[in-house]
Length: 126
Image (cartoon, rainbow, N blue to C red; front, side, top):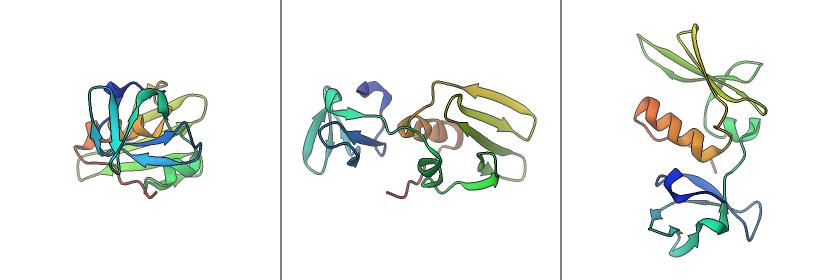
């Protein structure tokens, strides 16, 4: 189950009634989300657990073999994420400053973090 307050339009979530079936959040109501003209309450959806395949479906290019991915780069700043199934997401800013986010364990949380950091929606190839 996901609390609706955690979601943004464009997040990917799974359906409880059909494990493995994922949907894109198109609209968020007071008690449910909409996908393809159907409404689903928060008890009928779940977060897609982060895995190497899920992270790579986000079009992140592996930076090293140890689950480090470059997510943002410009002339002043490079931001990398390092993912581990036990520790969640670690953000590395310009190779030195590191911040651990152990609560980020699902795709919608990574999508929301990416949007907060870059102001852009994360592209996910599903």
